[in-house]
Length: 221
Ligand code: DX5
Ligand code: ZN
Image (cartoon, rainbow, N blue to C red; front, top):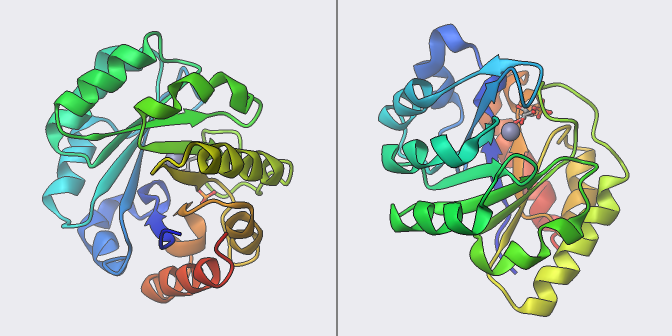
């Protein structure tokens, strides 16, 4: 069993005071930076320069979540910048086997993300090629949405699949993670938790990170 990890999403941080916002979550296990192109999702956020700014102001590993079309063209930029993991959406990635090799060659981990309605079977052939499977637990595009309950069964199925393979693969969830939902998601088998509003809307963000991690650890699969 791997220790649960909490990755605050800076989408929900005060962008005018990013340095201070990163400092508020210094006890986190990693930082999650969303990139949205107003095409793959109906919202725009982030990009290479924001990721570079974040990397310059933190020692935590950064995972970039690319909610963009044509990630085959752009993902390597994030690997070269120094992200620990670069995650693209399976629905948008034209050549995921090739892209995984390119990202690995640049020294970064490879993540693949599935929208809520994308079946797990779509990613199965790619599991040996990747380091992180991101299961979206809201429709991607915005922070502050409610956790989609049907995703619990998908998380459990993913955990079974990974267990059968005996693979070192982290299962990350993103969207609607709160003190309430993290318990069942951890029980189902997720082990990396992205939390945006649950962390950044708290008065004490570091305490929120610590509480989420304790709850997940107490209910780890
Ligand atoms: C949504 C983003 C998330 C978002 C999560 O598409 O990918 O990373 O920041 O925000 P919360 O935790 O508020 O649902
Ligand atoms: Zn995200």
